[in-house]
Length: 131
Image (cartoon, rainbow, N blue to C red; front, side):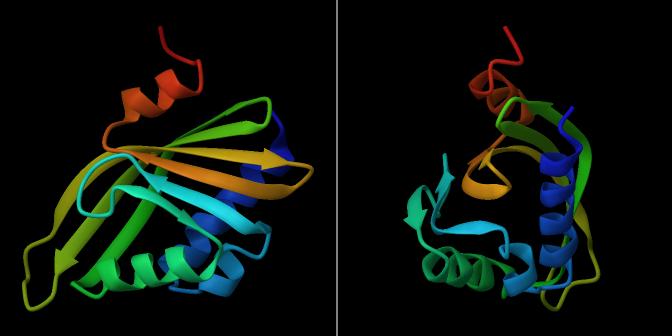
């Protein structure tokens, strides 16, 4: 396992949970591509500014949102993260959890892309880690 790639991605989640976009994507290519496979954000967002606005807008609906990497798997230049999301909508005292999968592409210490899948199995399959 490439500890460098895994550590880069662990730092991303730590920074996202602090709402620190600059720290989260300090190792990202200026033209990073972030693709959401389904949902209202479906599509590819390029560069740092557009994805930042997307994340900010989505998170604005929540008083709390923690993205917890429950499993991190590395395969070459790819890192798959199974993410447990703990969220509490604004004005609510009810917290709920979801799980999804993220596939990161990293080359020479630079994050090139993120694909966000609605479930973990799709991310594993896209990375060639599941038959």
